[in-house]
Image (cartoon, rainbow, N blue to C red; front, side):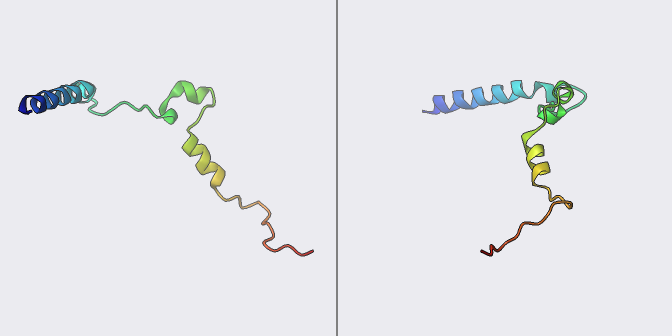
Length: 73
């Protein structure tokens, strides 16, 4: 039981170290930007972030005509 716990902790520690090599051993000391908005090639193709597109679509349009809330027949 104790051996299994030790092996598990060792595997997790090695995994965290290997995943953080770029952060730990470079001068920039930060994770790379993997967001769609941070990718130059996707921006050139006009592909954007879904969250940004949704935020823009939900923004109120000051030129929009307000809809009537009550219906008269």
